[in-house]
Length: 327
Image (cartoon, rainbow, N blue to C red; front, side, top):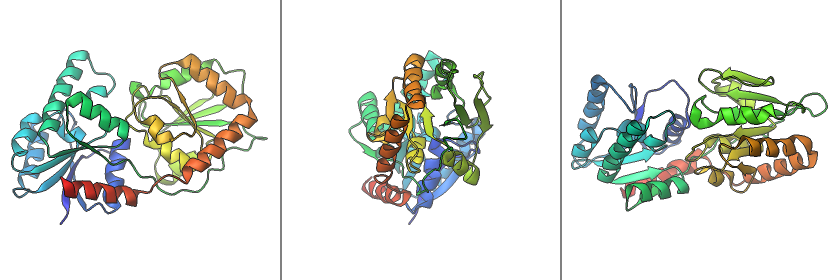
């Protein structure tokens, strides 16, 4: 028997959406139900669609909900938690999204607390996120199902004798992803050869010469961007895991990322963690990487070693199925 999995219907790529789709397709015994809407702030018609989807489930049935759909609507979720075995998968606590004013963040946080406290189980995508949710919302148990990663060939990178080193940033162009920190750091490195490719949805930001924006990429185009990368950079100000970290490492691409949330967990001792929101430190570490071939080689070796430790989506799907069976 398959378990309904209620997720936002979105054409904009994000780590949460990719996690949902990939783990469902890997055999977790889930039946995806896409819910159009401006989640987590849906209009009344979109709320009714969520209510109908839940009301079709027989008494005692299990339902898995993406936190973006569930966590802001205690008036919908809490009453139905008495009839159903509701499990919420939290990719990012609602109050940690960028651009929220304090009152909105506080309201979303309180709503999330009521929702998560009513459910049979909460699932997080990493150990750090589980600890945070458990402590912040006083939850007795938070299960952990980290993302998987698809097997990929080793990236070729650029030719050292013909091309400048290529930095790759795969992230939505939102304040939380910290692009401005990266660009400020790169302003201090104009005496060195480099290029930086930014992949992700959103409006391009002011950036130094040498930075190029591609918009969102998918499939073979995204694979090609990773294949030509010498270093993945992720300057996020908040991050519960950072799937792009393991996607880069699966190709043997070294990673420099902010030491926030679950990012060090994803790095697993490879690459380097940099203080978030500190352009001077980013500039210093990037200068070392750009200037020292031995450093680049050492990072590449460590990335390839980490590559052998990563688990696939089939293993993640089995872990999620086991968690759901216990809920």
